[in-house]
Amino acid sequence: MGVEVWVLLVTVAVLALLYSKWRHSYWASRGVPTLPVTPFLGHILKSVFAAREPWKLQEEIRNKFDDARMCGFYEFFKPTLLVWDTEILKHIFVKDFDHFADRRHFDMKTVHERDLVMMEMLSVVNGAQWKSLRAIMSPAFTSGKIKSMFHLVCDKADILVKISVKQAAQNPHVNMKKIFGRFTMDTIASCAFGIESNSLMDENAEFPRKAQAFFEMSTLRLAKFIAFGVVPRLFKALRVSINPPETDFFVDVVKHTVAAREAGKTRGDFLDLLLEARDSSDNPSSKHVLRQRSLIAQSVLFIIAGYETTASLLDFSSFLLAKHKNQQQRLRDEVQQLVEEHGRLNYQGIMEAKLLEACLQETLRLYPPAVFIERYCTKAYKLPGTDLTIRPGDIVQAPIWALHHDPRHWPDPEAFIPDRFLPENKSNINSFAHMPFGMGPRNCLAMRFALMEAKVALAKLLLGAELELAPGHEEMALDSQGGLLRSKGLNIKIKPIVAE
Image (cartoon, rainbow, N blue to C red; front, side):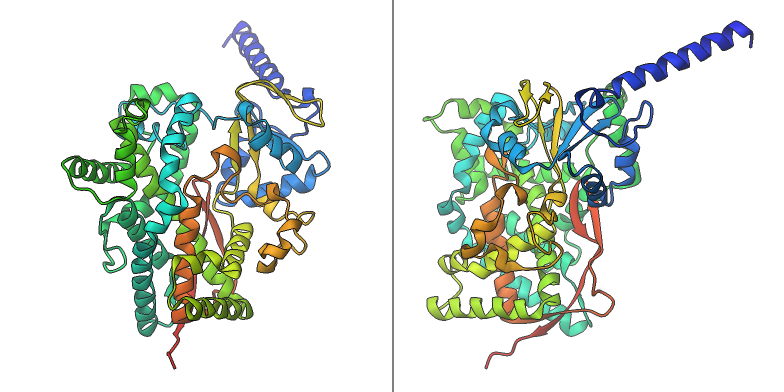
């Protein structure tokens, strides 16, 4: 190559580096600290390498920039702000929610039907569409509706205990995460769609296999997500879907169930409630908001969102109670007393169980389902107590793991202390330092159902068995798949309790 070509290449390279440096000065020019940046890539490589253990990155950032209470990030050139100041988070999630009503904007509308369905989910839609959809779906998760499903959850929990004890008789220890996943799948299938997925009874059941595959974040799938963030148009041109093929299974299941319901079969479950809302003459806009694809999307969301998170909550809870036998016995005593008072384990007793609630909330503190939560800025906003203005399009992240393990909010933060959440101690809790289900208008809509489901399963399991740690499984090994926290597989020893 001639001198002129070399000069041209060097000039282009220098200009490109200068452009990258300028784009990556967004936070520094506003006085926000950042970790060292890789030209053009920003912090994307650091995020990818930390994808399996994102809590470690959060702790590293908090320890390094703790006084600033925030840190800037770049996804390639896109600015993201990590904030762990609870007073600022209170404004973002609640007080000034109108500036942060959206979640990250995606454009996954490729040629695939599965992508079109995923884009209609409540957790993804934004603006007026989200507001209307949330209003339509909220009545499906009132206390009365949840109570009506209590007996269905109890039926599945009884099978859960039976299967756990049976496996314990045949094996020295039991993989509880697998059993809990099958329990949550059976429960959701029954309560939401009147479907008997037989996950607990059938080792080869299709429902849990498809759900588990859906959440597996392989290296190839992670690379696909990164590529989609850079060149989304290429995916449309090549007709490549961003979502896993297992999505199709759940879409087809819901389609067939919807068709059966529209033919006249009703059951009073979640799907029926959505259909009633869609066809309600009192709210004509419901028919427009809950189009067929949207209705299918919300049903698939209920399956996907409820399967992994609740199963992990039960998995972590069983480990913590097996590790802390004194807390396990305290909780068993509480549940046994409720049975004595009410004659059986009923909805009222479960909801009044203070220690049961506290144990689950402390588990959620130690092992939150999502390690971070995002909000998308829709209107320019000056963060209270600072000179920093967030611009439309910027993303703000709350590092849930770091907040839940911050010693300023939680004395002895790594210890399992359920009493923190007993009624007499709740006034000591900074609510924005404990957000396992999010906070504000965009919190988890099915939170109360998930907690009721977990309470029933845990209470019945403790009534029927004692939990002990299996040899070699004395410590928790964590993993993260698609931003959701899970264990790498816990084995628990189960000893049946013989009634006197």
